[in-house]
Image (cartoon, rainbow, N blue to C red; front, side, top):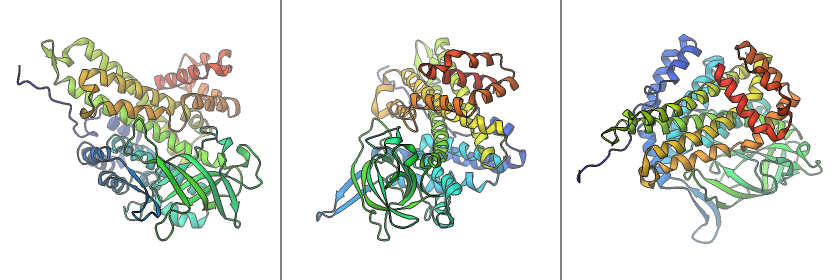
Length: 488
């Protein structure tokens, strides 16, 4: 036994090996689209288990670097990223991971196709999926609120399939004063003319800092405090000479995970900006971005869980212990199967909401669909995030000591999973968002109607008076997630 070594887990084509995705698409997407979609997804699944994985490994091994000054002392604030990271950006454009949703060649089913691409791309992207989330959200906001100039330039670039013209976008809302509470946004906007402003203030977290543009909230001079005084602005990060537009980068954040993703702290010093769709209602307008980014977060958490489970199943068929491969030990098999059951609920819930989003964007959604989309989006995001952490932790344990060793790459699964519950609103923030939907938009009534149609026997639980106490909000959202997943 002295020369015996265990073999590590390996991936095969992540589309053809997936037992959920193709059957779901076969059932829910018209047959006319199957051939082209499945051929493309097979191609992407092959890249995700090979080339993209190598690029992601390079991006993780060579994290971004901030160079504040040139060798001669001039402030330059250059953020260098690896070749792997740049290649993953090109791949996202070429494969249409944003474009597919806006081309809408598959009508209201386009979001199924696009999110299937993202589901395969994300776990092999070193979190390039984060800039894509904000890019998709920004494209949707500009599609709804942008004027002809913004649609002609920025929107077209955001949905381009050409790596030479493809843009990504940031989403700069988080500040030292507010965090999730954007009502305390302190960035100010000085009016230049009807469309143009100069923004000043510090943004505490800015992911996708290497993007070409961003959407951000700021308070025009004289506007009231609180949410009502905020407006939505479009900012191009660089001028014609490729210099930052009065933007000073203080540092890159040293994070628990997502190491390849550049996340910066920066200050705007009268940075040129364009007002989007008039002053005021900035929070309402940015909500169109959040709806997209929360669904992205859910898809990426789902893809992350799938990747963890794929590795665990493969290893279980190789690892010999107590006289047999561990997949043949009943307790280990039951453990993995229970994780699969948790994953299946997440899969069904996620793609159900994706379907609602696709119908809403194409004008095919009923009033019930629209209310369900609003009610379920925050629930979906927090539920899939929490389950991804659970699955990742159990998967690490299934590898024993190897799961705790850095150069196996496995510890990154757990570190990175933790971000899903933080991005786009923490669990408590999202739970309270759902409570507001219940109070203002008949969320409970819509869910009750849907569950009754699906034959659920648990609808009465939603009417329990105890849920009116916001201290129970977390319990309520997990109850709703489980009830909906159960009937799908």
